[in-house]
Length: 86
Image (cartoon, rainbow, N blue to C red):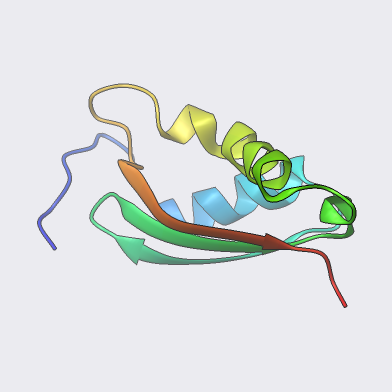
């Protein structure tokens, strides 16, 4: 994977996880990837009864600040899965 130019300092994966878990109540975020491309899976009771798009919008809303600008640390979310706990 080619490097993605960014001015972000620190772990992008940790920053994504913290942003999601802070914004979405009782959530657990699993994130992998690098080079600007990430795979995200989020589990939260907030998603119960919500459609896929509504749930994904909540996640994108939590991380949208990390996707803005030419040198944003997140260039693409290659896969986003949301689910309510069983």
